[in-house]
Image (cartoon, one colour):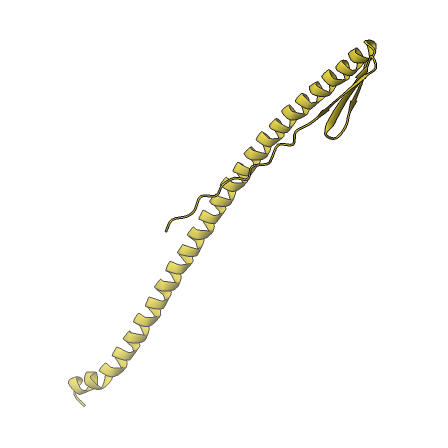
Length: 130
């Protein structure tokens, strides 16, 4: 057997092993690429989640501040109303506040004021144009 015939007989086996190695290398490269993408996506998702949590905390703090301001205004209005009621009682009037009416009685007269209910306006949604 000559060297040429030996390599000629061995060549199909070498090309098969080489093709298998190239295929395995290609699969490994694709796997590594997908792993890197998955890691990158996980990092991005974590960053987005942190930003959302920060934004929600900021919004909660803002809402809490607004709620405290509203509570202070309500307390002030209640105090002013109590003062008004006491002042009217000193003058001989009786002030009764109901759900939607305010009644003032005094000097033999009764006055009722009914609160006008304001309609609630619903926001108009803009149509999406394709």
